[in-house]
Length: 533
Image 1 (tube, rainbow, N blue to C red):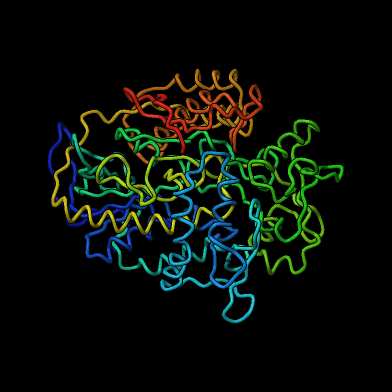
Image 2 (cartoon, rainbow, N blue to C red; image 1 turned 180 degrees about the vertical axis):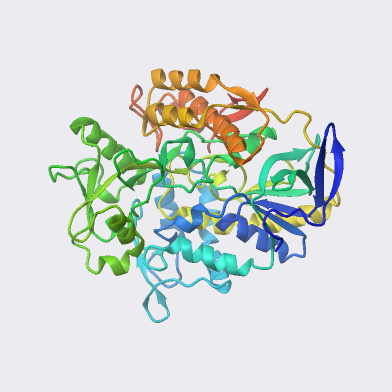
């Protein structure tokens, strides 16, 4: 592993008045969560020179609590049952063939993860413990450390990747390309800006939660991969579908990253109530508190609007051995002054997951040869308009491995490439606090045309800057990502999945298609809708 921030072994060349360091690789992976490290390991194990760029130490993978949804052999579960649950949650926009492809590969991907050192909780010796979460009709969620599955996945992959060339404190600024294919990545580290020439680039940058004022995502989830793809001329799709987890720990004036309260609690019997003790989901959905996340988040939002209360409550006092089964949640609650074994947990919906993203197939290939995407940043067709609980780690494992293998294959076929830096590195930026406040106000759980148009006015008041550090790059990424969400949300004049329009509360069968966004002259713009078969 290279020292933090090092461009050791690089040469330099002049570009205008600046000098850029430069290096070569076969495959560059942007991100070190589950999809990134699985992809990097797959490419490395095929003999390729792999460089992994890590902007931040924290990953969304680490914070994943619930588990991995996977169909195990010799159980009452089936691939078709898992596919049916996923499609039912997806609001008519899942690609059923993509869902089946990923679900069917789940057990083998988990077996590979175990071979890399992951250990999951057992019900009995040799048999994994299974729980159930919202939208699932079977107990099919494997977990580790009670509610610390992501931390165990990250630990295992970090160990397996210990000998990879992982560059800490390196931010990818641009995906470089010629007319036909990828040629590398423009990168910033402590030595300045440089180029890694590479025929294959894999985006595994995670989510975009920090377009909002409060989110369950770590600080690095600033929509980088969405921005990198749009700036490279690659489409994003279903980006209006931002999933708000129904149960983020509430704190008065709490912003930034907030703790998630896993829905596995509801799978084990916890119930959602308002300040008067009335059920939040009674009469809303046949599955009640275990309805899909979009349904429960909308029910919570509606109850808060009706009562004027700042939060609802998750009553988990009936769960035996709470601290042993859910140590992460217990610690977060106690840190906030809440004892979940004695009092209900105050919760609100929080920005959690981007169901859309960079358009790929089920192997992570984008429309640009040499560019791949995997994990939350990608839109494979798996999630549709609303992600089913615990399908995220599953997709990251499966598609990350496929993308790594194909990126290695592409690099071998393409051979050496030479990248050129972009002539203009300026991007539009809106003040971060202004952007987050406006997104939270106008593009949150419920949106409407008036609010989205006000949001568009705020986002139009951007200044053009050349990012000089991580924060200014992130501000540019947040700006283009927020513009993409706003454009897609304004175009979808219906309510579907986790996109709720207050002025169009019904689902419109004529809009059962995905919205695609491309950057035109640097501005995210509606592309031709693509029908879902």
